[in-house]
Length: 229
Image (cartoon, rainbow, N blue to C red; front, side):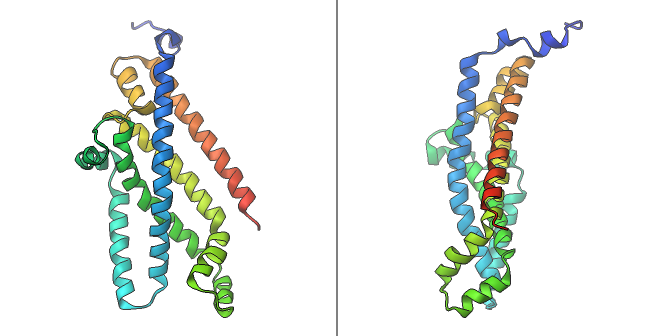
C-alpha cells in the first residue's frame, strides 16, 4: 500500500460505479435547481423590501429595516453545516424525510436566500439616482419604477448575483452530502473518503468543478448580453 502509485490510488476507475456517480450528479443538480428557484424568488422580494425600507425615512421603516437586516445577517453568518443540523427536524417535518436530496433543500433555501437578498439590495442601490429622480418627475408609480427602472438598470448585477449564489449553492450541496444530503458531496464522502476510495473522491470533485465552470460561463455570458453600457 505504501508503494501504491498515483495512478493506482487516484485513477483506478474500476472502483467507480457509473450509475452511482450519475445519480449523485442528478441529485446535486436537483438540489441546486429547486433550491435556487425559491432562493431567487424569496431573495429578490426580501432584497427589494430591504432596499425600499432603507430609502424610507420614517422611524417605523428604519426599525423594520434594522430587524430584517439583523435577521438576514444572522442566517448569512451561520455556517451551513451547522444550519443544516439546526433545521434537520424542521426539514423532516416539511418534506417527510431527514436524509437525501429533498431533505437538504429547506436548509439550502434558508441559508442562501438572505445572501442573495443582500446582493439584490446592493444591485438596486447601485442604480443611478438620477434615473430614479427622472422617473419620479414623470410621475411613475412605485410598481412602474420597480419594473421599468430598478430591474432593467440592475439586471447585470442581479444576474451576477444569481451566478454567485448558484456557485455557493453547489458548495452547500457538497457539505449537505456529508450528513446524508446525497449528491456528489455525499458520494465523495461516503463512497470515497469513508472507504478510502480516492478515485471516487477525485471524480466527484472534478464533476463538481465542471458544473461550477459551466454555471460561471453561462452566468458571465448572460451578464455581458444584459449589460447595455
